[in-house]
Image (cartoon, rainbow, N blue to C red; front, side, top):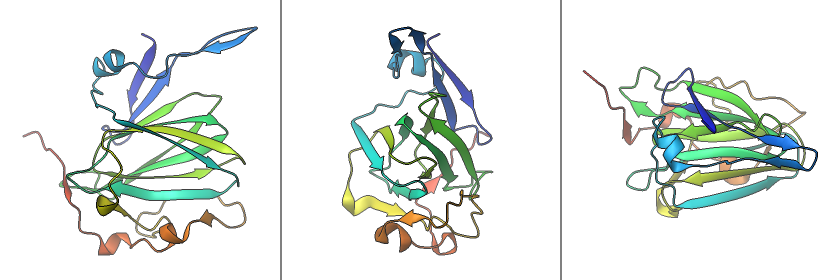
Length: 190
């Protein structure tokens, strides 16, 4: 299998590990293969790729999501640098509601994070000039764009500290988790 998929502490979040074939010339990697991922439970239909560059170490982007009917699943990877990538479960009735998972993604470990609909997503850059590429399952729709305050005490995310986070004015003004009314509901198997 060219891509390994492992469930994380919140099992709907998946660590995706594409193989890299390296030699003296460099490397080759199949970073996305719909059939390989679908065979391991990720059958998301991606419609858009996004690419961000964060110049400063300690840049925080998030916590973002889109509300239904334009909710997005995401497949996140780092092509240069490294990030602490965070996903927060926003699905009411989920046993993990309000909890998060954080993983380091970087250009050396080549790992990716699959985040299904119903999660807020954010990251902090661990190196300068970090580039993040991610696929999404719904087109960007500003009227459905939403988020939560990145440093909300209730969420208790252990963000790295580099002498002050670099945060956009939009992200600094996002609401607290206590003021959040989720548009997402977990599918519970009875």
